Image (cartoon, rainbow, N blue to C red):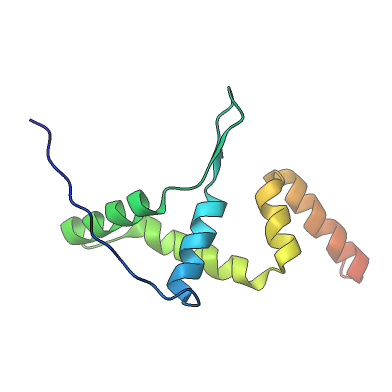
Length: 107
């Protein structure tokens, strides 16, 4: 017999860090179906529930900690670089960063 689920509404202020994290997670973990090309936002609700369950069962929420660190690092990037990081492959983004450092005279 399938287990029923419930909905737990959650109100968050638009200008809160939590809301910023949700928006970041959904865009950073967007996936594309290779067959149809359809993009799907990262499933933050599923992620959060799984991490809270892991925290309650094992005392640690490892993926949440990793995601929070990524979120903090992305906040340092300008909006243009954040967009580039989302739209480019890792190799292309690394090359972009290398070129920007070269342009600054850092390399």
